[in-house]
Amino acid sequence: MDRQTFEAELKRDGYDEILTGNTQGPKHNGEHSHPYDVKAMVIDGAITLAWEGRTQTFRPGEIFTMARGCPHTETFGPEGAVTLIGRKH
Image 1: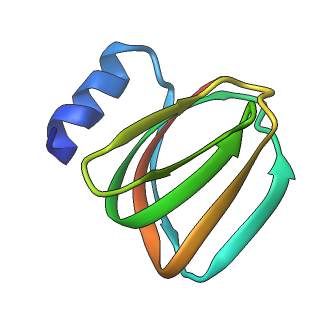
Image 2 (image 1 turned 45 degrees about the vertical axis):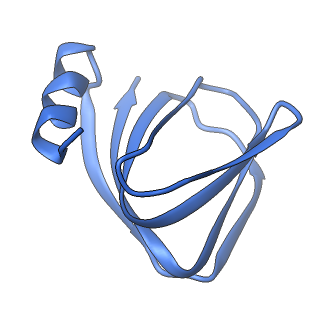
């Protein structure tokens, strides 16, 4: 899926905030949660998420979702990551 199509999908699905995240690596964000639902697509680099006993790495073109309040960690490799993020408050 391309960036423009994904952004249109976010708007259609009621994500009221859309932004581009640019995280420089390497970086690790310890366990935390967000007060909003997240749906994001990796544009460049990679992000590894750990939640609910599983760990998964997402690369360009891949999409992930995270329910509000879900405890998770985020790890970025040396290349960091650029993500298109939708937040539903």
